[in-house]
Length: 384
Image (cartoon, rainbow, N blue to C red):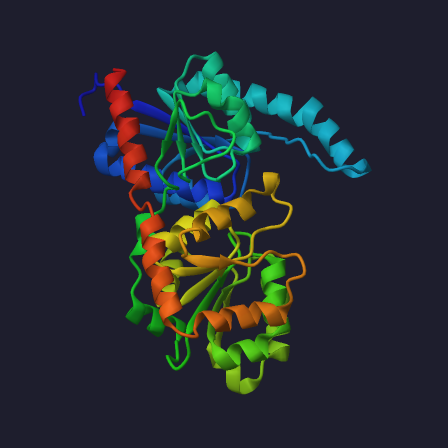
């Protein structure tokens, strides 16, 4: 690159969960394919989390600046009220100052926001500094931050064909960015690394990057009956791993233990191979999981998180399963017996699963990350 040629400076921001970090990783990898790396400086500004360091900084070389953040809790009680006061009067103002200083020092050409409370201060300051903003909304109901900041954006990309509480004037429905690497698993490799026996259907259970106590409990409550019918690959969450693995070891019969593989968290290669070998996937209904499952052409059994903001997980799940690509089991009154029996029903006959797999691919938008990266590139070039 010529010494006089200006580098493109792009700032990414989000709430700091896997649902924000992994789509950003997918977009960054696509940007690197269409813009030489020496012509870009990539930054992430957001709250501290356990995923940005290994996935953004270490794997993708993104420069990270952590800021203080806060959020407004809409449920009652003394503790939430005190937390809100601390956030409103201390954490949020501090984050606004920190993000302003960071943005002023970087002087970016563009800010890409993934939503979440961690992006609020960054987006507001970006517009104060007259930096163009692109937003992406993962869910079928826009989060509070994207709702409030959409007017400040140049473009709003959405995952679902219809997204509540986002003005259609700027919207482009492209899907949720999925890492290409998640789609490149091998069934044979999966059988080898997971020690799949191959005599029973394989159920993949994933509870998101943080795991899911409800899904873990549903499985453990019927573990013996479950493993008599299926082989199980189970991501239980890092915080839950010790407890779940100990309980599983105590209750699973010795003759069934080879049919159960438990992990705190799947890395990219493990997850790609797990998707490939699975006959069905049991998951929460975050947008990231839904679009990974659909892009891999898998039938889904979705247990939306009850009480999620604006009930977005329930709406995500029904939006996806309207394509007849899976089923939704809402948490209220859901028993372990019913959980197992509904999964068994999907295999009687197996044609139900095969039809769901085809329908999943109709819903999938595996090129979302590439298209968004291309929009970013075109905007940067046009703005030079």
